[in-house]
Image 1 (cartoon, rainbow, N blue to C red):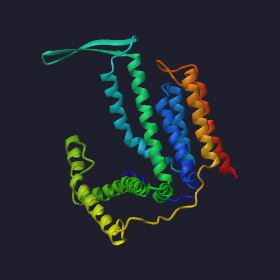
Image 2 (image 1 turned 120 degrees about the vertical axis):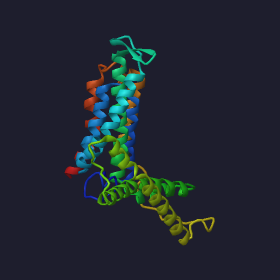
Image 3 (image 1 turned 45 degrees about the horizontal axis):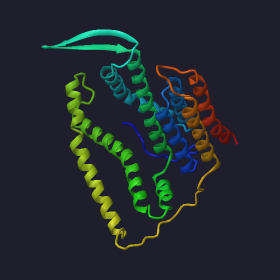
Image 4 (image 1 turned 135 degrees about the vertical axis):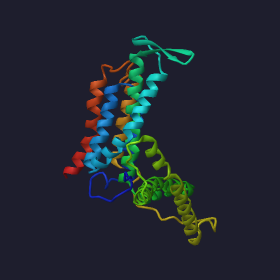
Length: 295
């Protein structure tokens, strides 16, 4: 079972402030949504993989991507089947389904759109996973709670942020306990394997409800919500670090190039600016981290 929880490690990325990591992964996620050039998207994904290597999270990231490969293949197939737009036709055929005849054509534009969708999805999910693995929920809560009127929002985001790794860990424990009772999760028959994983649903939901009740009782015993004003301990963090400012400025510069000169915008697969962006994005985002690491 995948481990998405936070573990405090002595790496450059783990020691960064939460605002810097938010600027790093937020700007990369934004670029993955903006770019349509495949090489530029590959550059963003390669940057995230290099960050996972620097943060000593390469194995955990690879396990997550391996588990996500089936879903990515489904997304790729659905996009190819649903999208038949384009002028570069590669295949044209008729599919007969009982009394219906469905005409289908495969175009280069549909393949490009499917590849673009998969790369974006992998980049976005990897941004969230790396941010989850390198940032403590307490740091996020303290950072958001430092703003007036956002204490409830900060608590809600911190609890939601911590819920996913806990849910994955509980699922692994329940699966091990069911396996010790004879449930076969590795059966060669697909239907039996699906039924085995479906048996995780009820105990996992019950465990989640029990955990939420315990959390509510713990908050009530500590007097949460019993008075109008509460004092939240604030962390001493910089509002905007130089590294976070660099990431935001570079992302703004790339956005300007995209809007003014169409850098990163490709009608098919690769635009002339694709190789430049595929090299510029990893260099600009990794060089400050490597320089800070070498000190």
